[in-house]
Length: 323
Ligand code: SF4
Ligand code: SF4
Image 1 (cartoon, rainbow, N blue to C red):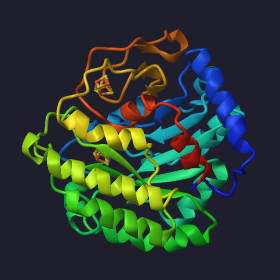
Image 2 (tube, rainbow, N blue to C red; image 1 turned 90 degrees about the horizontal axis):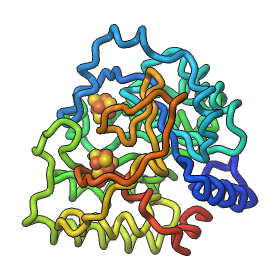
Image 3 (cartoon, protein in one colour; image 1 turned 30 degrees about the vertical axis):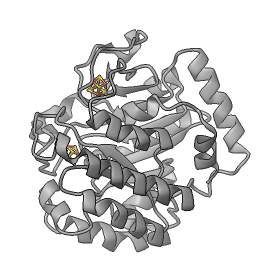
C-alpha cells in the first residue's frame, strides 16, 4: 500500500539504499520528534505534560540532521507534530535534503483536516500514520480527545479527495482491544488504508493497565495467528512483517531475550537535535556528535520499531513491499 508517487522501479533503488546503509552501519529510519508537546491526554504516555515553554527550544529545521544521516525512511513524530504551525517548512526542508527517502507523519489525527493533510502532502509527506486503537469512543477516552474517532473517520474521505492516497492506522495491541484488531483491519481494507501494529508495554510511564497478562497469551497467540492469516490473503493492508507478528506472543511469554538493537537501524532525534536510541531512553549526544550504537541489554518493550529492526529480509517482506 505504497503511495502512487512510488513505482515498482523504486523498489530496487530502496533495497540498494537499505543495503548501503546496513553495510555502513547507519540508521535506516530516523524519527524526528519535532515537539514533545501534545494536546491528547493518553494515560500511558507523559509527553502531554511537557511545558508549553519547551516550544522555545524546538529546532526550526531538521534539514542538516537529515542530510547528515541520509536515511531511507524518515518519520515526523512527537508529541503531536501537527501542533507545529511550521511543520510544512520542516518537512520540505528535510525532503529537499535527502534524495531517496520515504517520509511518514505519525499523528493522533485530531487536527488533521483535509486541507492540512494536502499541504503536508505537498511539502513531502508520503504516508500519514494515524493512531487508532479502537473503532468506537473507547479511542476518544483512551486519548483524552472527545469526538476523536468520529473526527478521524469524518476527515478520511476529504483527505483522500485531496489526492492523499497513503493512510495507515497505527494500532497499539493492548489488553482491552484484542477484539478490535481484526475489525480495524477490515475497516482499513474497506477504506483503502493500511494498519501497522505495535505491542503495548508499560515502558513509557509504568502504566500497567493495558498490559497483556501471562494468562492471556493464548488469546494473543490466536489473534496474531488470525492477523497473519488475514495478511496472507490480503497483502498490503497489514504492514508489519510476518516476523514481527509471529514474535509478539513469544515476547509476551518472555521468550525473547536477545539484546535490543534499537539505535542501530533506527534512531530518534528529539526537538532540540539530541539523539536517543529509542523513544523511551534518554538522549546520548547531539546529532553533530553522533556515535554508532551497540545492542543493549534491555527488554522493556516490543514496539514495532524494535521488532521490525530485528526482522530478517525474508521473501515475505519483499512481497509486502511490492504489495
Ligand atoms: S501517545 Fe501520542 S497522542 Fe498520546 S500523549 Fe503521547 S504523544 Fe500524545
Ligand atoms: S527494548 Fe529497546 S526499544 Fe524498547 S525501551 Fe528498551 S532499548 Fe528502547
